[in-house]
Amino acid sequence: MARRLGRTRLDEAAAFWRRSLREKVQLVWFKRDLRASDHRALAGAAAQGPVLPLFIAEPELWQGPDHSARQWSFVG
Image 1 (cartoon, rainbow, N blue to C red):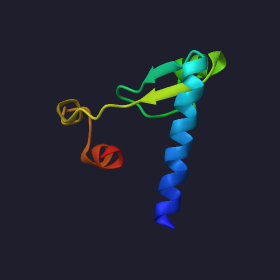
Image 2: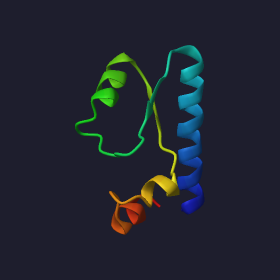
Image 3: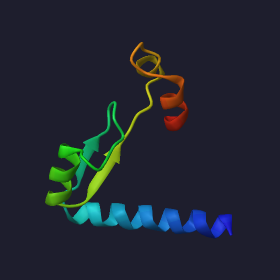
Image 4: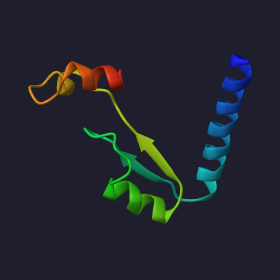
């Protein structure tokens, strides 16, 4: 079952990239906040076409004084 699920996800990713070769893809970088419900840039990008969300885990950023271990465990 896990293998089938993995293949399905690979197929979905491949289909996304095939579409992206034909149409413009909007890249949205989630820098600090992973919320999607009130993300203005995400809403604007989605109105333009397919969206490729990007999040790069930066341990140095998440170890700062305004972040908690609970937040990092959610991301990591």
